Image (tube, rainbow, N blue to C red):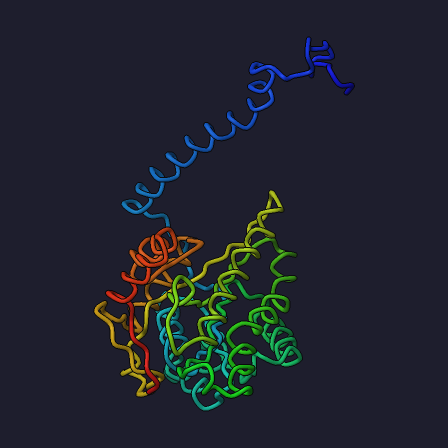
Length: 324
């Protein structure tokens, strides 16, 4: 466009755009903003309605693979999934623990009557993950729900953490999610159905001393799942769902494994409580699950405060984490 012309090809008297022309240029954006506001109001109303009258899909006879199933949260999720009628594929690097989980679920049932299977796999090794995917799909036909739950929990000041400990935590807590998704996603895409779940942490919403590598991996998992969901949304007909679970600090007493010493004015959550919330989130196809539910809002509010104010509230309510 030549200088001094209007957008409608009529030259202005002095080459300066008029207010009406600026308004016309901005009209599409203003329209989208107004539609967005209405859409947001509708989404809140729909969320409230769904909370009162939830729609939940059935997991009966669905093949659900759970990593880290040898103990703790992974084991409890496996137990509760079996009660939902799912066929549970238990995966862990701990051969004895994962076998025990499957045996408890099967309760003496064998062969075709068994509803649980187990595999000893290091999910941080891509070659083992690919072998796992082939073995599971050959035996079970498909994986309907993939739950990436395996993780290492530890606490120590950053400079007291060894290079190997940092690398191992990143490999298991974060990198393994890439290998598992890349191994099982193609079959889901071919069917255009499936559900991928990741266990993250409340640590991904905030910060705490003495868990720097752990928190970094959980930030990474949260970013991975959010961006991965956007990739899936790029396909208008996509029917593959994602759920990211963010629990507060777990009470590890039932499994007799103490990863850290947590001192908090907020109550820690139980393993069965988190497993139940995660499975409910899967059934409702929630993109994000926090335990407790109020956690997400309170953590995000901290990011909107001035730093000194945020530090004050963290000092007031934050958990103090010391090495066990």
